[in-house]
Length: 512
Figure (cartoon, rainbow, N blue to C red):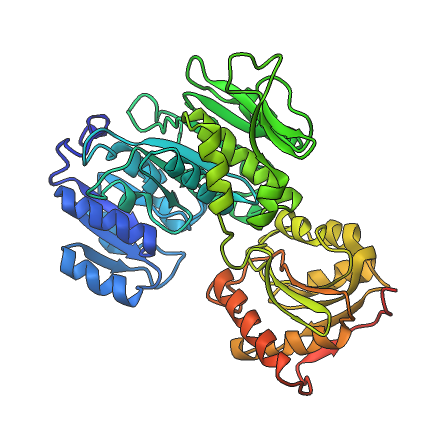
């Protein structure tokens, strides 16, 4: 078995290394492509072979072994006698394939660790700034990258945001910094025990956990395992561990982390900042962390008006801006550049995006709200709501969210595979709210039925809000597909109404 501790550079000798890659999605293909380029022998396995990626494997020179039964390990894997396993983020540790690797004592790395080891391909390695949280990761990642660019750095977002970090580190132009969005699934496989000793520990310049709420509990096996995965982002951070002063759990994760000597804890919040914090002083975003006289003064970064003009005025968006500013300041970006980046920034689609306003009713797409924490942030932004909720709950209980917002709900439209749990939550915690269940089985039927049902409930001044608090893969390709279909149905509804045969009203009266 080869000593893998020497494989900490693109320029190390990877030739002939036998590697099994688990998964053939975006991350899995990027790993296979990278390893073949390095001269490794690569065998990819997946439950289903995706058309384009499957065809490209043959082109690049990797082998493929299909796993028809997810509970069984293909015989080709043992016959291959692998020396290393690269696991894609979608595989939980309890899955048959990672379990097979562990039972044979094979080293298992995620694609993020592989990218970290190879980050010197085109010269001096870029600094990494790592972002995670239950909600707000993508916006914060994009904001941070924008601030770095405004500060004169060659920087880009990567990771869970959609650009595999393995592709980013192979960009021929190179970067000064990468802002890496990390999901809890990716974090489970980084900074593993022993990673520091064998060169695999990710040593970020700065890192943040934006917030923590229950999500992906079934994947991780429970709340504590999910929390521990998020905390791995802080391990070995060099300059700044950024945490949310309004979320005590994030502060405790910083306290528990093993960081580099001299690394500072930097708090952010919507209140007045103390020394080593960023926060609000009246309508100003203020930095009291990255200046010498931080005990007696502060630096102005932007105004709340700046944020509102960029669509970032909601409280959770202000928190994201403050977190991004803290990360950018840790990288040396000046306040003027941060303000310029904020003024130029525009939110991505499917994040509290207004689709239309018809008859005084505002239709809002927040399909990105795939968990209760994100849905809560959206719901609290509006006074009167017809809420579209449901999908794959991922082991999360939505009942507390229903109870918390019952008073603001005009009604609710329930969709998705886990409707029974959502309907039970309304029956128990919001019995006065009118609830309509959409039981359409075909993807094309779902959103037209949803929009018709919501239009019947909504009144002038209401907001119809798609904030499902659940994953989308039961009925849609992803959250973006769910949001697109919602927008299409809203625009079609604006041109005329039709009878809804797929929506079934549940017991319950009007919510006032």
